[in-house]
Length: 402
Image 1 (cartoon, helix red, strand yellow):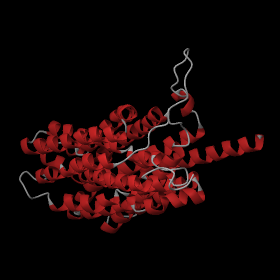
Image 2 (tube, helix red, strand yellow):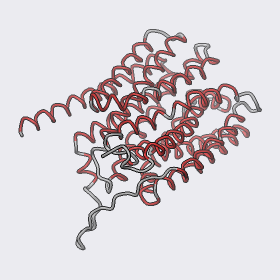
Image 3 (cartoon, helix red, strand yellow):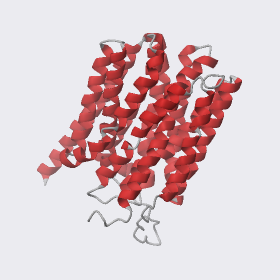
Image 4 (tube, one colour):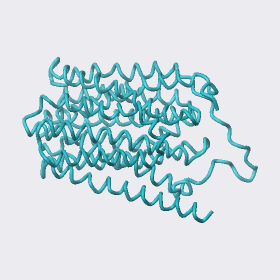
């Protein structure tokens, strides 16, 4: 299939990448300031990452409904619906800080979680708007659109905190621009019409294979593990970073570190698609594992600004390669008819684990320390290694049997 076989392919990828930038700007700001904002209205400081955790709980809860809504109403309609949750998040967070109500603030971060759930399907929208040859690059370029957030989100979080009283109120008010821009931009994307499934017999309504059957595929298992660990490990580190840096007297450097962490999360996207085409899904996932390992080593060797910087950069880049390798592997597991339930199941699993990581991040950091956060990531990434090795073994046995 030629690069021109799908109309507006590269134009759509560009617009979807821009939407990714808007979406990730919201996530960057919430992650950068939610724990610090919580300290203003909390007595038990160990609960400071609770709003962040609720964001991921809401993402997990909304992941499958968001996928099914998009299957019914289309990608553009689904992303527009998600934008309303982004606006609600800004409103609730602003109100919660203004009146000093922690649970209203949590309602705001939870709304951001629902917004985030819809936005995670931008990478799948990229896959659908590209042909087979261009698909890995389309996925990686759209994920790479989040590099906008590294600079816009970091600047927003760092420069708006004290514009109004209470602290961070202005941050959330200004942040409301991003879901509005998202809702407008997505309307200019021209998604291809979904392929109609083959006609089903009167006795059996066609809905593709059962989800349980699809989930038994080695490719699905490895893709789900890679996606889950990329999110859970990265979120555990990212949620604890602002608290740890504050305890180390580096609070003013938090926006700088988070900004460059976000840069590292998305910058590899500009060549990750090429890596997938050249080396394959599994090797790119393992490259992500190597970067996670580098970040953990850096985190365990000190708590200076340089250590936080290297850890955030390495794990951010590792997240990117692990996620892109897993996503391009996942889209080989399902048909057009099956995509809603398969993508929804994959992301629901990932965000449940991300929520668990975020819940424990505050406890591990406050009660035990930064080293405990780093050590908690180790078994997660080792599971990825085991899963990749297992899939390679299964593939080798299959080839030998043939």
